Image (cartoon, rainbow, N blue to C red; front, side, top):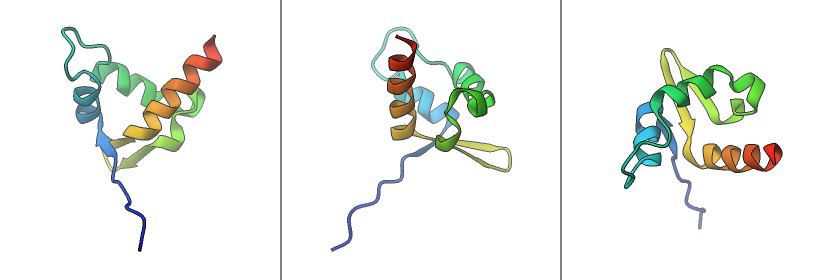
Length: 75
């Protein structure tokens, strides 16, 4: 039996919506995500970003992993 493969690639807007679900104030805006993507070659997010023409996709699980790691490195 093959393991289930989850497709967790999200557009910038979709990921921002998921990250802000259930909050009164947005904690992660699409603008902030685009900034992280622009600087992905410097901040380590690059392995979790795919560009298809003008479309930008970010791995949801990869973003959470990166966010956890970047916070630990900053401490």
